[in-house]
Image (cartoon, rainbow, N blue to C red; front, side):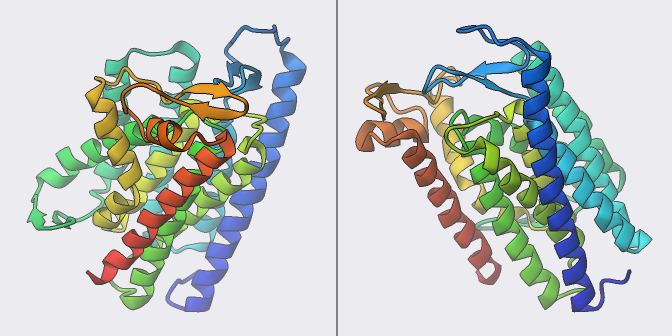
Length: 336
């Protein structure tokens, strides 16, 4: 199918969203049932298949990121079926990047790899984007633009994949937080990339919007089971997959500045965590269903818990609203 016709583009986007959404919905439900059926949960103990809900102390099935990745893959596959070959190449690269980093996340969830490998291994996931030399060397960042020449695909693409995968993993740990902020970030970047695509269809590819709508659909579907009280957690495989989709869309669509603005909460979280040398956790104390924190501020969650004492649902809602605020800024940055 040719995407020169706006109506055809809309059809592909809708098909991608629907297949990704329903595939994730089904996979998540099956995954929860399968984990509960094949494992025996021991009270008070964690395992490969169960993780402790830090705010409530109960055990919850994990590995939910498998469903997010699976739903995303199905969404992209239908898009690949409908697109022309030259339009499909960047989508195939993004698909491979997400699959590779999801496998890395799965290995991390299963074997708890060392911190150094969490930084180095995502470089492998950047290889598909490097092979097709995705992106352009002339980047328009927030306050300036710079030309990186041949070093863009060789150095900056892997740095982008590594940075984004680790950023998404920092602001996490509460019911619905990762999928909620991930969905908002993806929808923001999707909106911006669609505006650019329709303003200049010869300069901007439909691939970036397709990547974002597929991942947004997967995150929204997963929220049905991950929202408070969570029935399943995404774990690293989920956060890595969301991050890989975002960085792939940013690089393929040449919208790095938009992605950086959309991920401002994660960037702020990075600098807060750096103050603790990345040793601080995001959690506080649960007192009468409200979260409290009295120590030094090493996370956005600490800030909210210290001054607002929210419930877990309120905490996650505040952070999703913060993500939406920067998402609106990201979209408006098109005209800056």
